[in-house]
Length: 194
Image 1 (cartoon, rainbow, N blue to C red):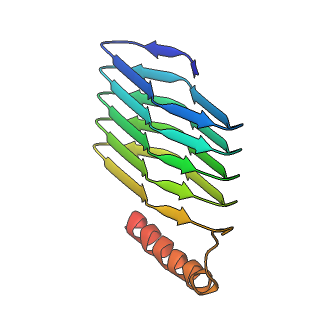
Image 2 (cartoon, helix red, strand yellow):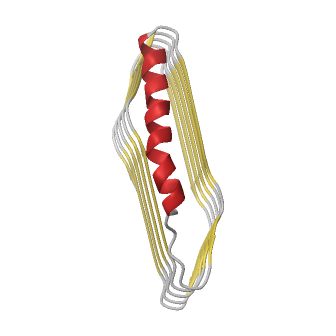
């Protein structure tokens, strides 16, 4: 665990809590957990609250669990509140299962009485019998100005796979998804320009 530079000025409170809970591994299991919390720079009456909870990791029978979390630059100015909560819940894997989870939270820049709330819940991952589960999440730049509230909620629910199964999206969903995304993006762009 590496906690890098904390620089705060002018009545700034920086609270950082990290809880790494139970690690139970059996039978030639490798558990690798890397957490990097990079630069926190806040100025002018800013409160930055960061809570990270990494809960139960139970792995058995030659299982490799790799979890990497990178929280990059938080820069906030002028009465800004940034709240970030991350909950990584139960990882249970058995029988030669590889679980790879990468999360990248990139630049949060907010100015002028902006509230940014980001909640991420990664729920139960249960995989059995030579299953590979790959989950990648990228949350890119949030820039807000002038009394803006940005709320982002992401819920990733139960992944349960059994008997040599690889999760892939169906062809039907693959055909419908691009059009749905293009329509949604068009609506968002129209709303933004208006």
